Image (cartoon, rainbow, N blue to C red; front, side):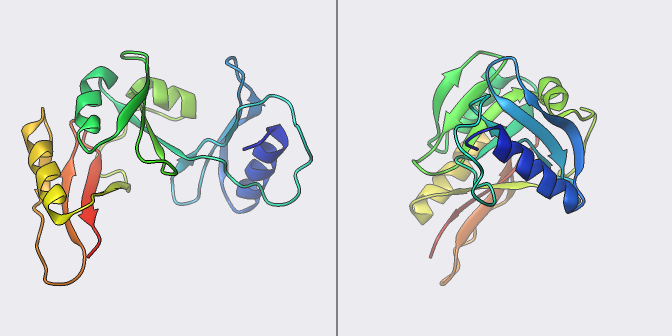
Length: 191
C-alpha cells in the first residue's frame, strides 16, 4: 500500500464486508503503518504501508504494491533450508526471529517467523492445529523438476510427500507435500 489512507480504506472496506478487526490501523515501531483483520472465511490479513505519512490522496480502491505470505514455524533457521529447496532465495535473515525469502520477480514473498511471534503480531491465539485451509503452490519449470522437488522435500528433515506426482498424458503434473511445520504445499507444472 502507498500510505496510511490506503490501509485505512482497505480495513474499512473489509469491515463493511464482514471482516473482524483484530488490530486497528496504527503506526508501528519500525516505520510501517499496519492493521490486521480476519476475513469471514477465517484468513488473517495484514495490510501495511511502508510510510507513516500519506504522499497522495487515495484515488479509488487501494491496490496492493506487493504480497507476502508469512508462515508460523517452530524455528525459522531450521525451516530456511527446506524452503530454499524449490529455488527461493534469502533476502533477509534475522536468525530465529525472521527470515524473508523471495522467488522470481513479481511473485509473492515468503516470510518465516516463530509461530508465537506471528500469532502475537496478527492478534490471534497461537494454539491452532489440523488443516489450516491453506495450500501454498510452487510452479516448477518442468515435469522432471516437480519430481526432483518432491524427492528433495521427502529427503529433508520432517518433510512428507502426501500425494506423489502423477504423469497424466494431458493436464498439470503435480504432487503434494508438507513442510517440517506441517504447512501444505503443491508442486506443479503446466502441461
